[in-house]
Amino acid sequence: MSPSLRFLLGVVHSLAWSGIGGVCGAIGVLFSSTAHADAIDTLNAFLKTSHSAQASFTQTVTSPQREGQSIKRKVSKGVFKFIRPHQFRFDYTTPFAQMILADGQTLWVYDKDIAQVSTRSQAQAMGNTPAALIALAADVSFIQRDFTLEALPNSEGLEWVKGTPKKPDGPLLWVRFGLKQSDQGVALSRLEMRDAFYQESSLNFTDFLINPKALTAEQFSFKPPQGVEVIGQ
Image (cartoon, rainbow, N blue to C red):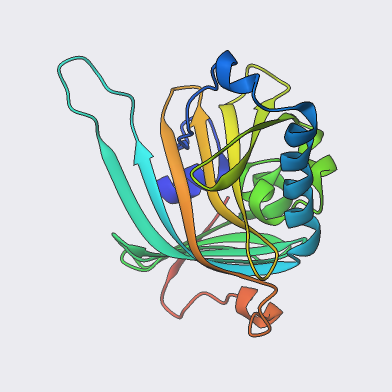
């Protein structure tokens, strides 16, 4: 399984996502419970109003620092699209070309450089994974089935919500949503996560378009090119 797919599906050896660090008690005192509720309301507004979206992204993956070794980071770039509640697409362009596409039935992974396509049942592969949290949730109740949500103080011009898994023995330690108000509505600016191996990663979104008219269901249809090896899982 490719690193990009492991990252999106959040399996045990997945790449993980980095966050802003813990909030000290002194800062927490400055924020009322009303302010905290507002951040979760903002997340809910994003999920309920962005029926579709498109954005460019930069993904930075940071491995835990080992004694005597420097910190290792990997950077990938591409374009992300989704139409709720069943379709999303990641097109990686840097450092190599790869497509990860969910069409509502099948999860497709196309590695152009090695001319290989792998397929999995979308329902079995996704579950309540990071990719599902980004593109498939219709409101916060979807996330709250498996995560306890907590609003964090605003930082870097964003409203932050932290999700902690209700099952402590899973592959994720936490996930964080960084949200920003825009002329279009609420946009997702940052998505961060840390896994059980303390690997961290951050998806930074730019040019986030909410409900773009040019985004159609046809863009989430995929047919393997002729001559490409197809592997089912």
